[in-house]
Length: 155
Image 1 (tube, rainbow, N blue to C red):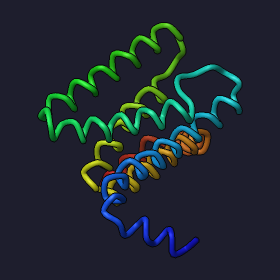
Image 2: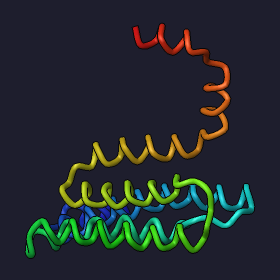
Image 3: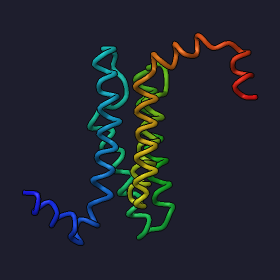
């Protein structure tokens, strides 16, 4: 089994699929966090694990297609996604934009995966999931910081 996996990873075919596998994993991580949020809060919100996987893969595919059709194809896909998200936000009438902005970032992480910027994409994915996961802790931290604390930090 291990030898078969090594053979796959070392093959030329893997080079074609690798950005999509990384993108799929990134989308799944972000989507899983959003799915857990939905289940915890029992409030309908934009996207879940499948949606974020698809958004990340759309970013990767758009990056791939931009090599054939030029960079505007990547921009068009991003704008199209933005319009879809805007319509979903309008129809849901849900407060906040965290999931929607996360979706746009996930698209861009998929595009980074296509460019084989795996370290940057992974770092930003971890930062995104951490920011989403630690909502209560971040809000609690801000409640305990005074304006003087903020100025001292900036100095």
